[in-house]
Image (cartoon, rainbow, N blue to C red; front, side, top):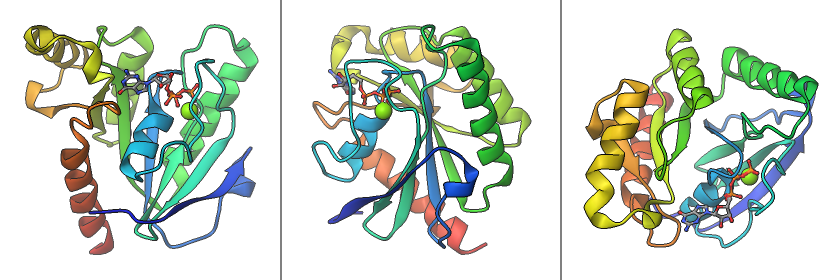
Length: 198
Ligand code: GTP
Ligand code: MG
């Protein structure tokens, strides 16, 4: 899969503003600053279509990106960022919950976890909740370039253990080295093929 063109479809503040289209959607979920926008940019081969920030919690809208007319990335606000108010956190949770339960375009959830650290409480509870909704997310460990090679296995084991999944199901990714890019694209392709066959 080589995505030649990508563009933002819309920046929505709520379900009323979600686009009506037939594109399958790939939802990105993860803590603020974990690398959601960077993951999107890497897959769509753009440096900065999805805005990245050194300022955690910056993405507050739900952003829809058309990826080469093949599918659509949905960039949700990051969860678990301490500096947003409790009310804001609750409204994020509600927004994500609504999307997951009702959005018919949803084909795949990608849960991003920082490869440097064990999954946080929020990572674990989001993972459990997805499973309870019947969703098996693709787990992507971000910032793979920040962990030395000889520590890699330890960090994979740490994430697998924390989420109670198989080590083989942790996909290490880096926007710097492009590690994991081909594999992620392959998985997205498979999911899209299955989704279209439905
Ligand atoms: P919010 O929109 O605030 O929730 O953040 P986000 O999850 O979209 O994260 P974003 O992609 O903006 O990345 C946050 C920071 O981490 C930026 O400074 C990125 O450059 C950096 N970053 C993301 N992915 C990688 C990676 O693979 N390697 C390295 N070294 N840095 C990364
Ligand atoms: Mg972002």
